[in-house]
Length: 109
Image (cartoon, rainbow, N blue to C red; front, side):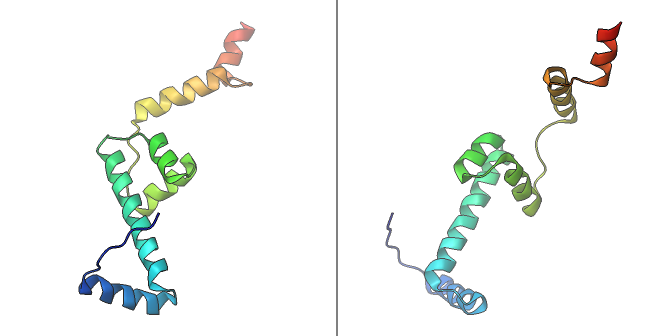
């Protein structure tokens, strides 16, 4: 997609500075800044409960594990509660190939 916009002089000065620092052309710098803004926006959407972690991953075309890295980068806490985490672990253990140690003991009795 191609979009033409007028860039205010203050932003152009920032682009010039960053372009010299990173030895990249202004277009690449602008794309990088735009992408950073998209990440920030989607993290805000997640933090405010408007999108799920899965949707965030889908929209950025990254894995859930990469979303966790993104949260760490932006100092965002995951919204999953401890209770839900424990429940998820229990469900995963119950339906895993090997089961939990507790389930194995119950099966033997």
